[in-house]
Length: 96
Image (tube, rainbow, N blue to C red; front, side):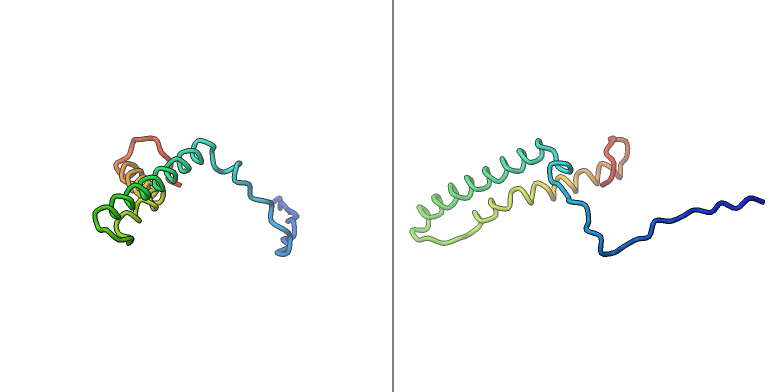
């Protein structure tokens, strides 16, 4: 009977972790998409704020603030749709 003996590399918890780089994990296309959504949300907010000022006659924040959350809302809805399609099966996306 043969025994296989392996040497394990000792694990040091104080070793500095390897640097995490954004460009290695996120594509440029994704960054551009979310930058465009952020810009669109800001422009919609400013337009909504001007319209609300004309309607109300005074400055206040209302529903137009939710335009600033456009990138987050887009991300949440896209995840829900992707998960729903994955549970149906057959669309080719891998769960993250």
